[in-house]
Length: 186
Image (cartoon, rainbow, N blue to C red; front, top):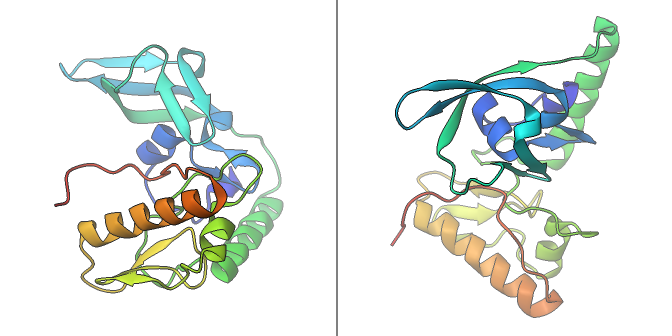
């Protein structure tokens, strides 16, 4: 699970969206999860009970979610500690070189469309560095929106909508959010 090193977020968030990179995905190493329902009851579940896809996890036949993850059991492959540390160093070096880790952000904003990279589509539209308020599409990686200090949720949402609109107009590709938007930001 070395691929998870440096991904911002929590175990619950990684489970909810099947976080991953560099060929790895969270649910490939999950043995079981514990969930809590609205009534407070806890339940043990296996991965077989979920529909799992690229950046998507849903309890089969249940949308929107009525249960939330509170813990997980991971099944990891035994190996050399030195090899694991080397892979982690490699992954972190790649992140530092390609992602805006020096500014607050929520990670990749959009899912990669089939056979394409969201960042490249956004970049070709000339949106790298575009700013609304104190939020900006990262000049380092176009699939990241960074907080330059005091950014409002409405500013971030406006950048998301603008990127979606421009990519759709230019390429006919509808970018889907990888981040989950909660609330109304009028």
